Amino acid sequence: MATQIIDDTPKTKGKKSGIGDILKPLNSEYGKVAPGWGTTPLMGIMMALLQFFLVVILELYNSSVLLDGVSVSW
Figure 1: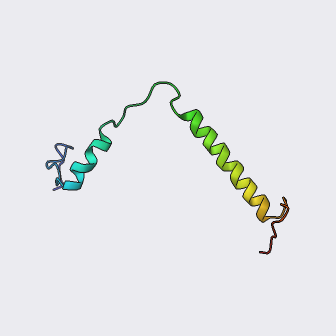
Figure 2: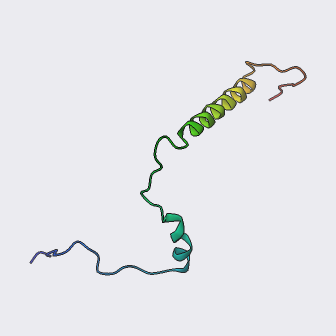
Figure 3: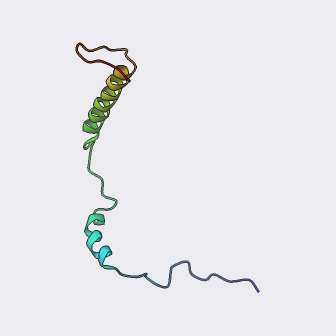
């Protein structure tokens, strides 16, 4: 005889731990979204600055940009 599933909901809630009680407030605003664009422009600016920084480092490493007084000996 095949197993018959009557209800999909779990019968137990799970174990309660001390760390769960500590972390629960961090998850209290789950699903809430700030109206409008929020911090998206700031994130875009920070990503652009990071990309610029990485390009400068790549060009220095690749000797595409040479700085006075800085010897590249790697």
